[in-house]
Image (cartoon, rainbow, N blue to C red; front, side, top):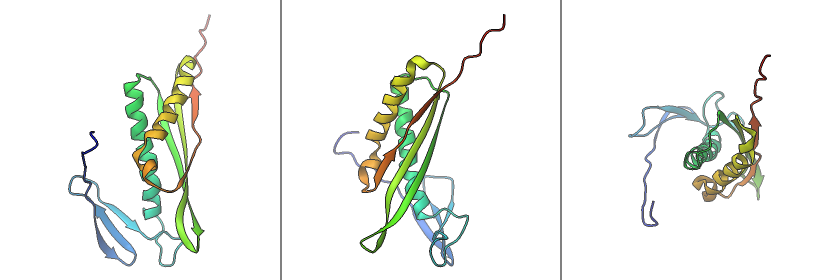
Length: 154
């Protein structure tokens, strides 16, 4: 991507009822219900909230960044799970998403690649364009698990 390139991502949200809406994009198949979170008056339980989507944008950006870097760096891995938590707090009397805790767990088969795995996790966190675009504090707590090799039965 050159410096002068721009990309556009369309999202349309239509009111459904009460504090609920329906989110979609002309280029995506899925339609997602969204609502005010239950912590607020009129909030709805069990429906994606803007706060969930904000947190998801950070963690999904991290994942896609890691997948690109690991492919480019030829790191073989068995699994990755990105746990994340968005923390909302009041600052100067207003709610903000003050902190995102990212806890990726990467599983690899060979211990000799553990240091490389940690380096690539860190690099993915650094290049994530969503992380670079927000004011929230990012707490990054990566873990690499090495699968135990089965011992040969003699």
